[in-house]
Image (cartoon, rainbow, N blue to C red):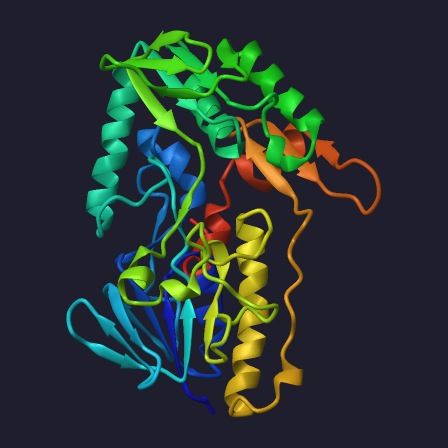
Length: 368
């Protein structure tokens, strides 16, 4: 027996896990602007290597047994009538609403357009640009910047590649100086120029970049891996700016409900939970939210003591590939400094396949 209508806006990692968990317990409608799931973890390699172009795209059609997918854009939420209005004018009634619209990433880790063909075309443009460039600049020394620099270097061993980072060490967000040193060693050993304490901005002339010390750098192509922006502008435009923090994240309580809204949840990169915005955290949030939604539906919202609280993931394993056969894994330990694992563990866990077989299984497809 399925209880109530649950509308999930956003079909990323958190939205997919949540919809799948609720499929047998509620009438689930998953709303997404894309026709397919976008496996962002595979996107950096897809933006560099043609043979990976199609890997990030996995159809939604096998995700839900009982529920349904609606391709569209949410533009309005009526919290009194409990319905979501799409850009098409269609209205979706809900008993519980979930905001799981994630965050916007810089290219090539962004789904461009609304169809796989449009996104694949954007990947192909990046591939052609990388193949033709003499000097490629990557700005940002976090996991994405390091991973992208390594992918570019392996695809273009003859090109000049520079990684510029505003901080004093790479991979600072991992909390492990050792991991940062290992990344820097790999990059420099592979002739990637690493510029630390180098905050970059576009220069006065096309193809030039300036750092805070007044230095000028010329490059044929640049990629900016300097952070993400939560996809919540639509909420502000829909009149729900009071749901948002100053950074644009949705404010949630410890049960992952939007503050003051017992029937509205927000999960994944879109909310203001203070933790690293990584896939394992998004999946963990989806698990807690699924339990709380089922409890809410079956108790008509009366028994709040049945809800679970979400514990922010302060220390999570973080895997940074250096191409398909190397990388670094930061593994938290209860006490002391995190363990840092190298080539073999990183290759097996992520670098070789970028978790594509796992995500295909999550959406009901064979591993390959």
